Every structure is written in C-alpha cells, then in structure tokens.
Length: 121
Image (cartoon, rainbow, N blue to C red):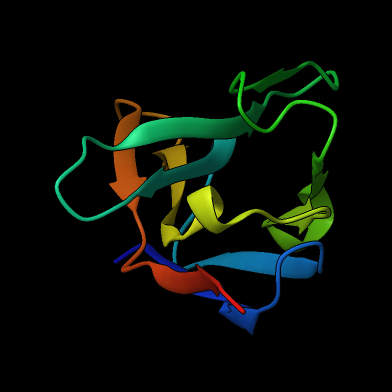
C-alpha cells in the first residue's frame, strides 16, 4: 500500500520559515504530479504548490514569491520551503501525489495525513 507522510510542521513566528517534507513509500511505479495543499478551519482545501516531471511548478496566488516547492525524484520526496510566513498561512498542510503502483495500474490520487503549521506571535 502506498503511503504519503508529511513532516516539518510546527509553531513559528510571523516572518519566520519552515521546511516541510513529504515521503512516498510502498510499491510505486511513477509519481506525477506531486505537491502541497492546505486547509484552515472552516475553509476549503486550497492549492499551495505542485510540481511535475520536467520541472514545471504551479503556486497558489497567496504564496507566490514566498514558498518554493522542490522534488527529489530518486527518493520519492517533495519539499516545501516556506519563508516570510504570515498568520494567514496557518493551516494543516497535506501532501498530494498522483501515483501508479505498477505499469498496468491506473493513476490514482493519494493524500497524506497532514502536518500542522501555526504562524503566531
């Protein structure tokens, strides 16, 4: 069974930085795309950043210029460097990936359990 596990969340002051990591494990043939979403209490889950093979990236408007997504294909990992954090960045951050377990498998959407990021003084 494929699993996505996030790490790196925590409490940080406004203007601070955090680096999130997501590791995919299990039987994996391919992963594309891979990225991050977040959800604050009472709000819908929203795009943070995604990346595809070939290096293309897509960022949510509220994080562009402050967050950077990167990927290590050989390790089945994706990262999110978050700088200049604001209180409105407070949310549970979820790792997301579209994964094929074998060459014959249909691509399927997988989600991690999430990691809490709290930006507060």
